[in-house]
Length: 199
Image (cartoon, rainbow, N blue to C red; front, top):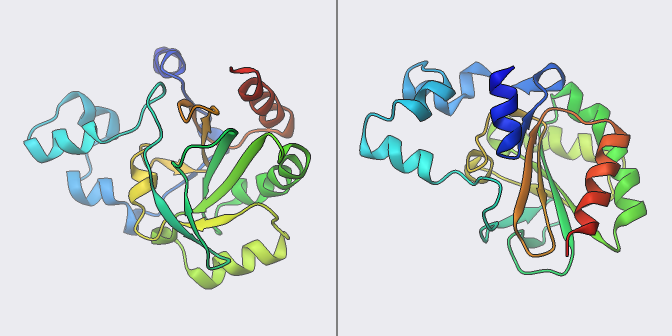
């Protein structure tokens, strides 16, 4: 309970009941820190390289950095470029069941709010296979841009904990919330409406 309240006060909300953990065989934190828990790593930073990893993390209140990612459509996107719209980033993987349930909702909300909010589905391809990503996108007829975080570097800047992970960004490019876990359509729409009200 304390962890949830502390996280919420920083704009980080975890709904781990509706989130898919990363595969153990590919979990970079486990390999790098030899099985230490993520919250223990942040408290007990032992070396300069560990400290640098923690410092690179993006937190609510910070500006979204420039990051150029390739889309499934072959175009390049700078997700941190200045824009006059709010933005939702959804990190996902094709094997993630909550991601599959949530994607049609994101599709509907993208169609409804695309004049005011950009939606980017960012596949963390380090934990996936490109052919599965393409099949996932086709089978759900996703209309919002699907980008590839091929090495997982962008995902790790937001903690890289589980799928889906959502990042809510206002039209000034400031990160407002980081949400781990699936949201209902009503919750997603509420987040979009809240982003639109920020001036």
